Image (cartoon, rainbow, N blue to C red; front, side):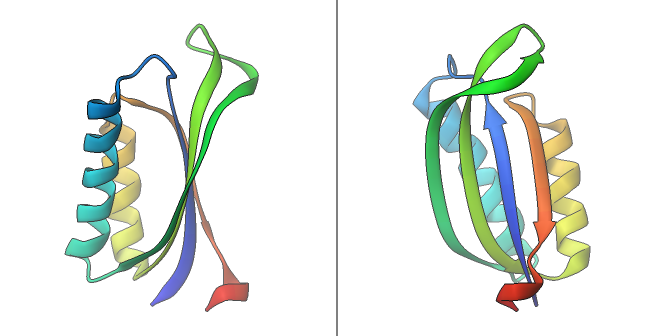
Length: 97
C-alpha cells in the first residue's frame, strides 16, 4: 500500500447531505480496494485562485489515505463522474510510506 492525499473542491452552495454522500462514496471506493483512510481534514470555504464554472469560492477537503495504485485509478474515475466535485487532485506521498 502506498500513501496518497486527495484534495477535492465542492461548491459552497451544496448542502451537507450531498457533501456527506460524496465523502461516503470516496470512503467506500477506497475501502473496496482494501485501502484505509488515515485522516480527513475539512478546510472549509476558501477563495479559488481563478473562477471555475462561475464559482469564485469552494469548499475544500483534504483526505490522507493508503491504497494500491489500481484503486487510486478507480477513485480518480469516480471523482471525475461525480457532479458535486468541482476539482480534485490525488498526489502520491513518498514521505509517508
